[in-house]
Image (cartoon, rainbow, N blue to C red; front, side, top):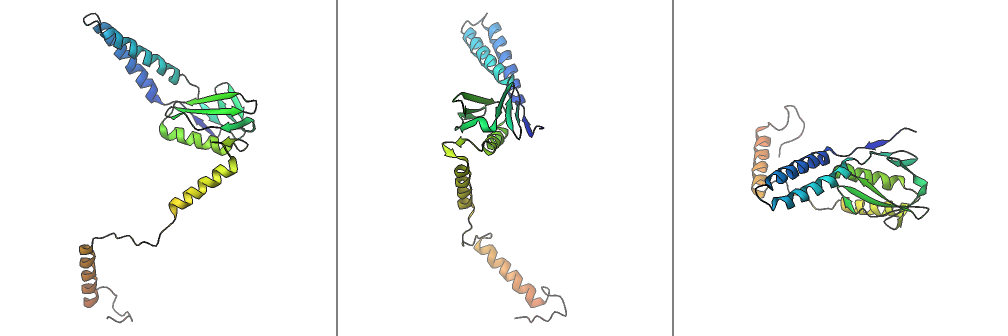
Length: 191
């Protein structure tokens, strides 16, 4: 029962927290000379404390049988709803359990890793409604939308401009005329 994937918090939030704390300290010192700077000091200190929450979030592990977020362990069978995420970076996904208990999963990773985590949660939640749709219907509609975007048309795409096409055609005829296009001894006739 090993971990499939482990999602760690992004180091960006740590850097932002340290920068916010530094600016708050600088504004506090500046407030000795310019009193309105104390307001900026409080604002940056508040932002820095908010980022402490994001930095201290536990890693999220996606297992075959369950989702582990710190001490919280949620079996995939216990999920009844996976709702639309409130935000993507940081990822905040409302999850509803079979006991009608609501759980907000908060992941402070990059946008790309947040998308991957959300995709894995949707893929493993086989018994849940995903955005109000049953699992199979959600993924079938998703596949149909993907197929619609990927259908090929009969349109021929022009790679070269008309002038460039004429130059290439002229070069082709010149090479055929001189015999450089076909190896000697070829039984193809030149036209």
